[in-house]
Amino acid sequence: MLMQMLGSFAEFEREMIRERTRAGLREARAKGRVPGRKPKITTEQQKEIVDAVSSGRKTSAAFETLHLALAPSRRLMRILSPIVVAQALLMQVLDAEIAGRCVV
Figure 1 (cartoon, rainbow, N blue to C red):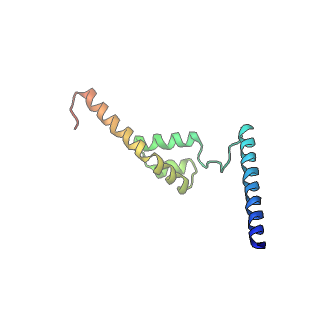
Figure 2: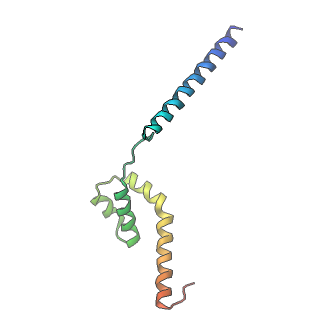
Figure 3: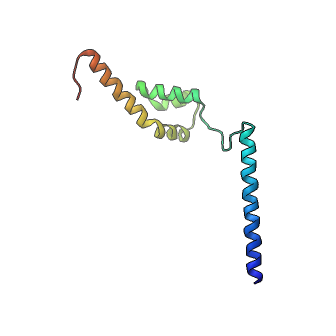
């Protein structure tokens, strides 16, 4: 019986911790704060990396000029790789259509 009571107290305390955490996060969001870690790569750096990759420049040189480590850069490329490939294919199709060639 004692163990059951201790278990119920622990369960109640855990629920109180969850409630306080959720209330704190709601309050922080209401004040405009975003929870979590700040991104290592700024949006300007992301745009520059995407431009470098889509234009065919060497990506490692682009990362070095931005003074970025390889890990966040590779993570960004893993996320953006399908998008960049799709953009490159679309540009090839559009260029072929403008030139009057059929690409299939």
